[in-house]
Length: 337
Image (tube, rainbow, N blue to C red; front, side, top):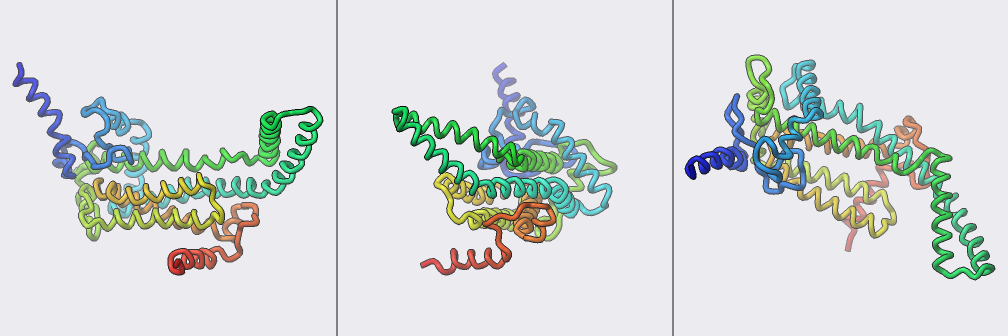
């Protein structure tokens, strides 16, 4: 009876041990999933943070409806274009970025521009309100605490009314995050399912077999890891560039914003070893997504494109954004003493 229990335990653990070395399962038969070094940072590639087996949290994620929708998008794009899988991944990523995230990013900038243009009016109202409350506090004998609470409550109501008046509540600017992150996760999950043979076969060859010959250059097999680390390192550099461009947009950052910037830098560096533990198909998708994200960030700095998207002009907006960006980079990284 004890031997039988040991055999059952061995059958459960063997696929995970094989997957942890990054070896893809045999064609037509899935042995297990990779077990990356950093299991919590990115759930998209299915780290073994949950229980092993079909009941694990990742199994539920991999077999969910959004993951199957992402698989359908990828297969449909590949069938429509007839391109090799590496090119199909690039084209699909570009299409999703152009059709989904770019309009949402433009809307985000639209909301943030309207919020920024409200700040002068908010400052005037705050100054007048502070003066009125000071007079009333002196007349009625309010304590400093009561005066402060009265000021904050009234100011909060006034600012909310201004956001409603101009239809620019800052929460609307977070719509991009709520759409982009789930899309990124489920596209990554779909690619991992393809790389590990967790989907049904298509035609004479399974998608996993198509992936094994669907790469290019130094990653001809999309089911294998990028042993050269070219894609992971390139991904980290692109993510750091995006973070630095965002940081340069803020002339004076609050302490919280500085903490967030440092945290994002750390995540960008951490993504390098994470990308080195996933199949090349996922690393390629992450690289393309970051490259298009950087391009999107630069495009939204263009005055002409902002005008095309009807984004209101702000005081912080520059007529020569790319020249200013280059000058800021040069001053920050080359003129530092």
